[in-house]
Length: 84
Image 1 (cartoon, rainbow, N blue to C red):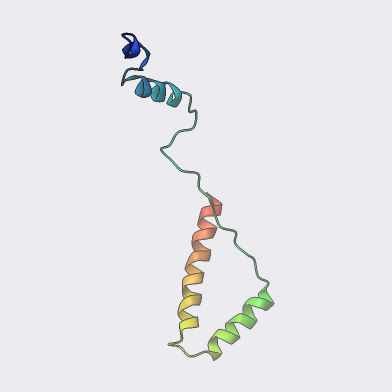
Image 2 (image 1 turned 120 degrees about the vertical axis):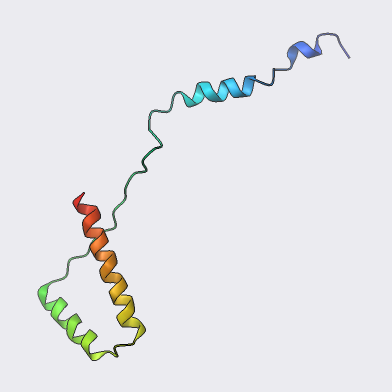
C-alpha cells in the first residue's frame, strides 16, 4: 500500500457538509403542505329532487343510505376547502 492512500479518502464530514450545502438551495418551505381540494360536482334541482325520491324509496337501515350520508359530509368538506 502506498503512503498517500489516506490523502485520497474524503473525511467522514464531507457528505454531511455537502448535504447541508445542497439543502440550503431549497426555496419551498416544508411547514405547510399544498392544499388540494376535491372537485364538487353541481347537480340541477330536478336531479336533486329525483335523487331524494329514490333515497326515500330505499330501506332506512340500508348501506346505500349510510354511504350517501358519508358522501354528503365529503361534499360539505369540499365546499369548505374550495372557499378558503
